Amino acid sequence: MLCAGTALAEEKVSLFKVYLNEKTTDNFLNAYNEYEAQRQDTVNFNATIILSYLHLLELERNLALLDENAVKLGNKTKFQYGNILLELRQYDEAISLYKQLNEKVPKWSCPWRHRGEAHWKKKEYDKAVMALEKAIETRETHFDAYTMLAEVLTEMEQYDRAMEVLEKGLTYYGKDIEDPEEEVDMLEVEFLYLDLCEKTGQTEKYREQYEKLKKLAPHDERLKK
Image (cartoon, rainbow, N blue to C red; front, side):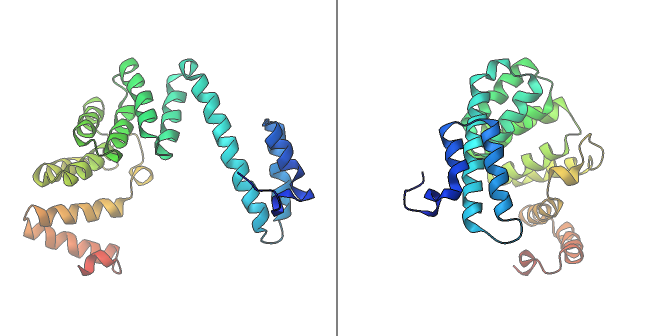
């Protein structure tokens, strides 16, 4: 990973070497504190590189620990583990965990929604639709499941169905147990709605949505198309 003869071979990297030789929490913290101190009062790119490696290696270590003990994880912990894998684009591994949760707690909406996202990222559209519909079936007010399902259907060029899903989902804005502003980018949702108005030939709705977006995002390049 790191070549001899670089700045990493200097005396200052000794704590990094200690961590490389024995990846423990204490060694990680000692190295972390050392290199954070080096950039406390100035930009230190060498320390930043080492810190990046430290975080990467520690992440890999902890993910390996979770993988080795996956059967012991509680439902919430397993869900969060799946979400980390989803963020890391390890979609098959994430889907495997979500499937386990779907079987164990089939009425828990969140694993269905996140499984739908993983299938979508893999362009497994039919599976994504199935999972997202299950998320809505198990929690009718699941706002971001509607918006994501609308996005998937749009990519599938099922515009009328996407519009129907999105409009129904918008009726649940602020009514779900989750804060919609934390779950989705509402500006993106507004532009999705504009796009669907155009694609479904709803001229009046398109005009109204366009005027709304001119106020919300007057300088957005998408309004100039």
